[in-house]
Length: 301
Image 1 (cartoon, rainbow, N blue to C red):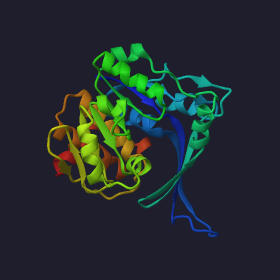
Image 2: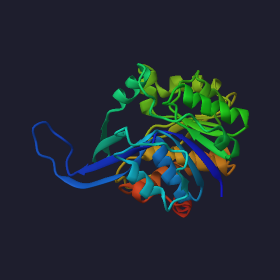
Image 3: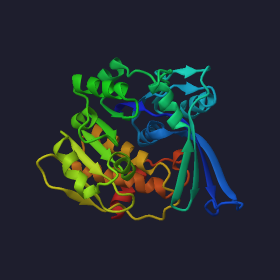
Image 4: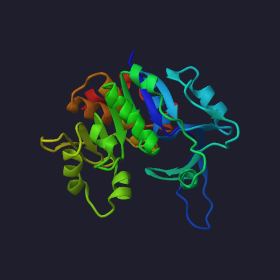
């Protein structure tokens, strides 16, 4: 069993699936609602455990509103929560996601969470654990915690541990030293709002020492390495129930494939199949893809 260190965002996620998406001044019927651990790293941990990898979870401080949820959810999974800091003085970070068909809108207090820390307030996240990085087989690092995220990457470089990261800038330390760097449409629009995928890909490709992937939802996406060509991959077609967690599941698939020593083409295919299984059900966080389901998805093509 592979031992994977995850550093990043772990929250309580509240998901509401509506019969019809919200309209001003009109009633909307909630068809289903669920509460589960989410965030880029929380969802990644859930998927990796389902695939059969052991996970060491680190990152966000867990506040009082979500502490019991996190403890109960992961206690029977291959997820070690010993590095998490449970802080009763902190309410905790949650998001609220409205879903209808393939449309989703997240809401939360992330702006306040980060602006408070940057203006001298408490950073409600851990410093990465050097020992855990040294002893892992591979890692995945969210970029959201600034110098602490970069420190996690520095530990990976120091101990020659390959890592996956997401939505970094092309000239960042995290991207440059990653084994796999996944850039989403949202990441591009946030950092490079006036640039297309095709314009940005060469910059990411030539400034990274690993594999760069720029996704495109359910459409054909780009991947490749410095000095090589640009390859494309067409995602698996499935009946989409919800896209919630699709990107985080893709990240988990990349991390698992990296830890298993898959080549670039195999990694991209495996991660895409993971995401395809996830979007075919709702909520995938409570029914994550298994290795067998992913292999069946791959063979279906």
